[in-house]
Image 1 (tube, rainbow, N blue to C red):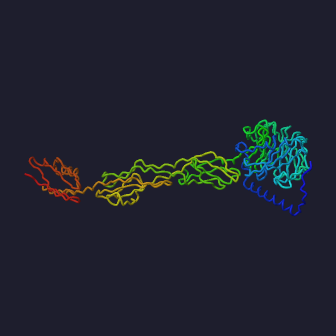
Image 2 (cartoon, helix red, strand yellow):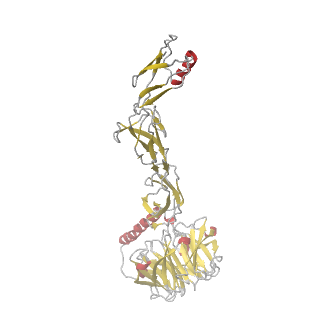
Image 3 (cartoon, one colour):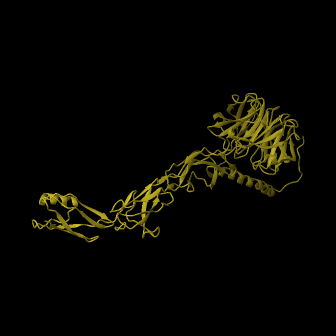
Length: 568
């Protein structure tokens, strides 16, 4: 086959500028990928079919391998029926549903009649094909990067038959210093070292390999994560993509099965090719059964270890989590409500969580139960924590959002319930002021009017974190004051002045003991601040004698003078 020649001689300087034009965007793309922590995804166990695909049977009825350009704007399929690599344009990068055949292709049948695998260098200037007939990997040069119409065979190849006689897939490390072959005969991935990166003429077997027969006995293709820490195998027996972990990146001899996989049988029964976007957020599968390239989404791993405080703070709930690898932002959800995207943080203070609440109860003031104070009390008051909320967290980066994390509950706590009693200025429900020192429940207000005038009382209740509440108002008063009664007794009989300040009991006793008078009845009663002295004739002084008392009373601050007179 004669390779296409343009016949146009480019000037060296112009050629260099042309190359630079393609290299600079590539550098920017790679910098963006790595600065965004491109290793955030790559977990096939959570991959989901994106309901996006591209039928390629119009170009080849036996598609085997698939590859995408570094910017996701182009897709390539290698067809075994026509021995050709076909190029497609994605109007929306990485979106397979927007792919259209670009009317560009490269026949590779002159090198191998059963081409099964295809790969590209990151700058699109080189293409590689794995041939099953010749057991070789062939290298091609694209004069216009990513344009297979400009590809020509570079007269460079690497024979891999010494390792496996049925090479199906080919893939390279990100720097082109290593090449990997999927050997279908031995169910093994073989590693090669390229002394000159991206030059298969310099490839040598590194004596490193990884058997994958424990997962797939007919492996067709392989792919690696951008950092070389993960490897993926797809085959037609299990219709599944299997994931492996490399303890030493890019060293397949250190690969172990990660117990992670994604079945693609619901879309393709004979998957033969696999590729990923550089950040690992998207996976692409091609197969012989439906002649279609299918797209899958690998979500960013959600945050883990979400925790919310239970009453630790009165003004907020603090939510913490373990970050997702590669995430650049997080969003906390309270119940089902998103609280806004945050930066690259691992904690959030939810000051909008429901505050604690005070139940004020019913206030009451005593009505004349004591001459010294009014008793103020509240029944049924309480303070409760804020509403318990359920929290979860999402992560995101430039490629998209993760699923939800696990959930955890949290709530705002409260401080101690405090009291401040208030008293009205007059006997009306208005003009209140705080009562100094009145901060307990119950409280005895000794500052209420002494004369028994009524006052209204209410209490302001507070607790840190909760909104202040005020009780109902209630009227109360003290017992009106009891006047002091000074009793002065003069006896004409023994001329003896009795002591004053006698209550009825001691007065009666004194009469009995000192004057030998039998007292039938002596009592004091008080009506509305007035003192009334009740007395009865006293018998026993002589057979026919009685003693009458002359009473002089002064209301309120009054005295009572008792002058006994002798009756004959």
